[in-house]
Every structure is written in C-alpha cells, then in structure tokens.
Image 1 (tube, rainbow, N blue to C red):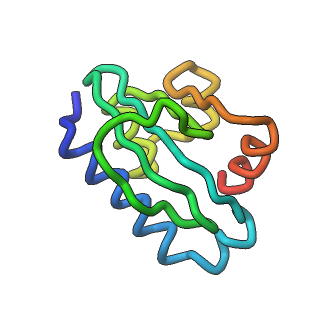
Image 2: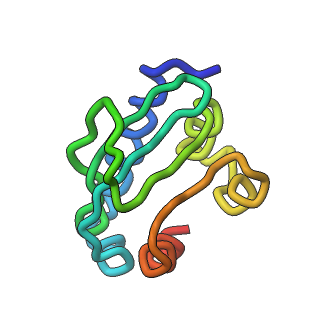
Image 3: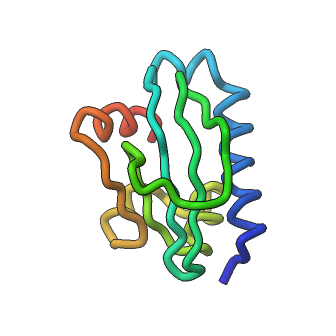
Length: 112
C-alpha cells in the first residue's frame, strides 16, 4: 500500500506533467473545475482544481462539492501516474471511479 506522501507526490508529478504540456492540454481540456481525489484504502483525500489543462492548488482533504470526484486505491493512483496502469483498464476493472457530468467526462477522455 502506497503512503499518503507517495499519493501526494504522484498528484504533484501529474500536475508537473500537465504543466509541461500546458499548451497542448489547454486545447483538449479547457475547463475550470474543482477536483477531489479520494484514496480508498488510506481513508484520505486531496482536492485541487483543473484549470485550462493544468492541475493547480493541490491540497490535503476532501472537497465534497467537487465537480469531478475520483476514487482510487493508493497503489493504483501511483501506478496510473507512473504509466504502469492504463486508465481505461483500471476504470473498467473497478480500480478507479470518476463521478462527473457527462460533458466533463467527455472532455477528460481527450486526455487519455
């Protein structure tokens, strides 16, 4: 089981990757949405904001009113960010769930 620190580092790694490709991701994901990432096995959560293809303002704690909520196991989060786990397969296998509007899901799909 990954630690809270490893999950936090994974989210910051994802944020850095999105920032490095900001021009490209902005075209695909021009959203301004609150995001909650709930880590099932740790009973922990993080919240952030998706803003024009970037992940910003990452902080500890849940955001119950987040427009996009992802629920995932700690090891799976780290594997997803590291590229060792395919998001589509993880979602189909129940390893990750995403609660968002249909519009937001369609926009997020462009990143995969």
